[in-house]
Image 1 (cartoon, rainbow, N blue to C red):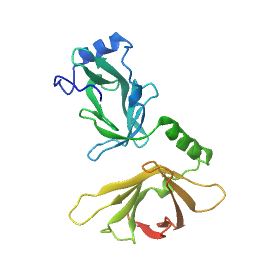
Image 2 (cartoon, rainbow, N blue to C red; image 1 turned 90 degrees about the vertical axis):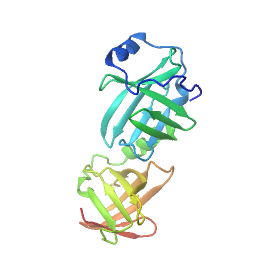
Image 3 (tube, one colour; image 1 turned 135 degrees about the horizontal axis):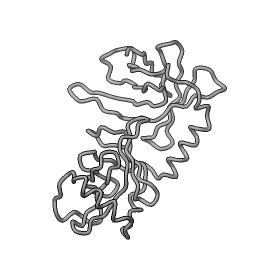
Amino acid sequence: MKNACKHFALCTLTLILCLALAACGSDSYDYSAFEGYYLPDSGTDFDYLIIDTNGSRWRIGSNDDLAASGYLQYDADYDCIYAYNEHDGVAYQFSADGSSVNIYSLGSFTYEMSLDEFDAQAEDYNSSDSSVDLSYLAGIWYLDGDLDADSYIYIDSSGGLWGLYERAPGAETTEVDGGFISAPTDVDDVYYAVSTTYQDVTYEFTLFDTDSIVWGGENDYYERLE
């Protein structure tokens, strides 16, 4: 953020302060530089952060669930911005540094794309037959059907969201890619895993029996074991 906090405020303020901030109404601070779609840094419990086009409204979610939302409010006394959360009535300290933002105690997030780009991806997804029930894809799919494999794919309970995870010996598992799944209506058992981590990246995969898929251009074999 262009202006660093001069004083260390409490990580969470009381509801009274939050209501006071809400009562202030709009201010003249320009929040537009924060606009965008953000992905979480490691250790964050949420899947995304979206800050709207004028930069004042924000929301955080996990998969399809909205976890927190509200607006940003500049506090001149502390020369600092707070993220007021409508869900719990608390104002969290907000900071930004280049392409990264942090909402204190909620997590750090890195800029991924503009909202125009994000909306374009969502439009491409919705143009497919997104009404198709993909819940039968849900589960954890392990490379070569090995529970100890260094790569596995997690597909959420709706079948619409996926994550590719890799792990090295002695290291923690890391999500290296993820996004949403689109099912073409004209080809049976063929799906597209659209990445929201990397721009213009889509993996084609084929379901060739109930618990086996062939993934991507390398034709990697994954088997559902969980």
